[in-house]
Length: 275
Image (cartoon, rainbow, N blue to C red):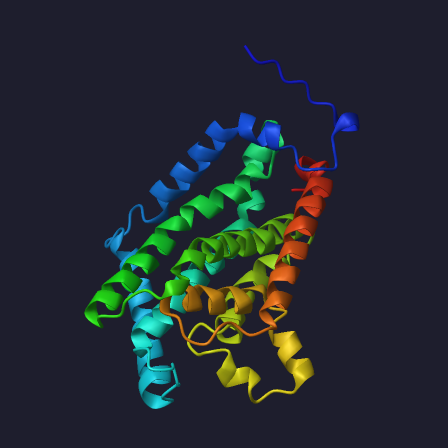
């Protein structure tokens, strides 16, 4: 039998991977529970996971593809848009669910000890359902339009990892901040809505930055998902490589991720008292 001694005075300020691995069963249970209840007691059940991205793709195609006629470099617009949507939908889901995850689980947080980081991390697994559906849309449209993957496909796994890291970076920060500052519960939906249009999901980044001064372009790429979605799309469909400013997105993403882990560890010490 494993004996666990919890001593608040000896807790490390660094991430304890060994302790997280020890609670991997709890991680799986939380992810499985969220998957089961997500569409429970709904008339259409899992069909919502298909209908929601399909409705968004239809609106994007009508507005940006037909009305605005966004230049996609010869790529069929529905395929262009769904590549951005797959990455953004995963990011938005993890950010939204992680933001309120600790407060939603306050009953468990107050009663038993476990590394609280397990809670927001489990949301990343649940988001893979939407991500898998997005990838299935991409494959279906590539077959329908007879588009073959580009030679950049070898970088595709890298951009999947970057999408996950970006989502967790923002999600962990929000989950810790929401405990102290409950206003963030109302900020998260706004961030999701604003971010959808401030990120090159439905349009190429060049359509925006070509009309902006340099300082505004720098601000645009301070959005971590701006660089990730450009790279995600480029790795699948080819075309113009991501902007040189993409490295700003990647650098900021790493900074946000590391600082999120440190801040979460700091708040974790008093989490059960203030949640």
